[in-house]
Amino acid sequence: MARIAVIGAGAGAMAAAARLAVAGHRVTVYERSGTYGGSLGRHARDGFVFDTGPSLLHLPAVYRDLFVKTGKEPLERCVTLRQVDPASRHHFADGTAVSLPNASRAGVVQALDRALGTGAGTRWAAFLDRAGTAWDRSRRPLLEEPLDEDRGGLDRDPYPALRRRRLLRPARQATTLAEIGGWELADPRLAALLDGYALSYGLDPRRAPAAAALLPYMEQTFGSWYVQGGMRELAGAMYERCLLRRVTFVFDAEVVRVAEKDGRASGVELADGTYAEADHVVLGARPGPGLMPGQAWGGDGDPAARRAPLPGRFVVLLSLRGARDAGAAHRTVVHCADGPAEQAAVFGGRIADRPTVTVLRPDDPSTRPDEAHEAVTLTATVAPHGPVDWTDPALRERFTGTLIDRAAEAVPGLRERILRTETRTPAETAAETGAEGGSVPAPALAGAGGAFLHPGNRTSLPGLYLAGGWSHPGGGPAHAGMSGALVAGLVVEGDGFRGSR
Image 1 (cartoon, rainbow, N blue to C red):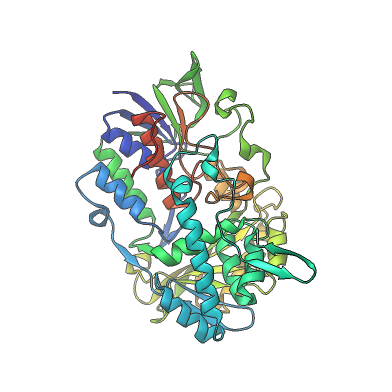
Image 2: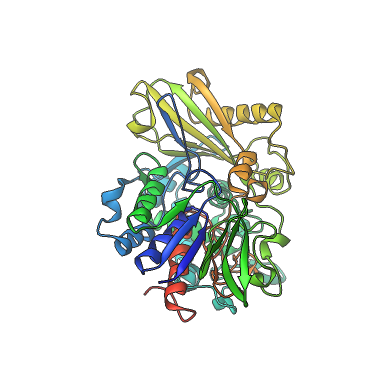
């Protein structure tokens, strides 16, 4: 039985902790804040309850596997899952709108044809077919296997882009998501739909490789799921599973250094000077300066340190008077009129004038005090704290008003119903998680020479492993859960571990 120190209590860290405890190891989790869950946060006041991080679960099979492997009670006995239908509603700048059914390729084709004109659905379906080919080519090395030094061919883009004929010039293929939208989808609304998927994950469509087509493919193929009571309920179920497996949690315990002895990780040092020995250390948080020994990264150092901070999220929590509309969609995306301008602002450290806004209206009685009220969350991807000073009260108030005005395009009379408004910005995210600028990690992507991959789960320092959104295979609840499984496999089975089959 080995002593294992886990840094952080986010989804990836807890997934690793539960699996390692089941394997017979003595696991202690050190969390800098006063609670578990990481980005799976919750805000509650006067009977209104809001998710402050991810609000929907994709690829629930990741957590079904976790709960099956760590105890007798399956996931569905610990939380209530239901598919969201429609999966999303989209409002475009020209006034058209479309509701996309959940996990129904034929239904999506019909909806797009009705809303955008005959042929729109067929073009989208053909795009998803190509995205499916990319999924088949890259799924296992990208999501289910530890990242090897040779990267398993993930430097190359698996998306089979169409060749674009050009008069008297060589044919070209789309290499970015924005080029797929412009060249293959041939409709600005379909392009906005595609760009919106990338932006919601904090990716710039102008630079994200064509392999980012996997993001809409995964959602529209495997569906979108809501956890009754909010995603915090999933975090709570994971925490309870860890306790059941005798994982120890130490809260308000910030780890400032991973110790090294005789060429391997030997424990962790806390901010109060406490030192805890360990045979293995799992880092489930964004590495801060000085946290990891220099040799842990190998010769190139931390790859993330050489990049500009990723975008964050601006979140507005609205407590509303008045009942939820019976036909309201759980998730509505209000797209902007000028996508490239918004992307230039977000990824250039500025504020977009008319951002793309996601409106979340869960049909869940536990999120509101009674049926005469409604809890609504507005979210926009924004530049990180630093380039933009998100602590400026006037700026926060002005941008909050911008999001409310944009959301009102899809929810008439929204402003008149507001009882209370509360705002969370990348500044709060930075303070709570320690992530530079309040950045939110994106999923790993193949292609672009490996520029969109994350550090592997094993490090160059024996005994030190990486789990969670800042490591392979990247951000998002499903990806974080996968990283925990990969780390547990590496610790239990050694470097020969090749992923579950």
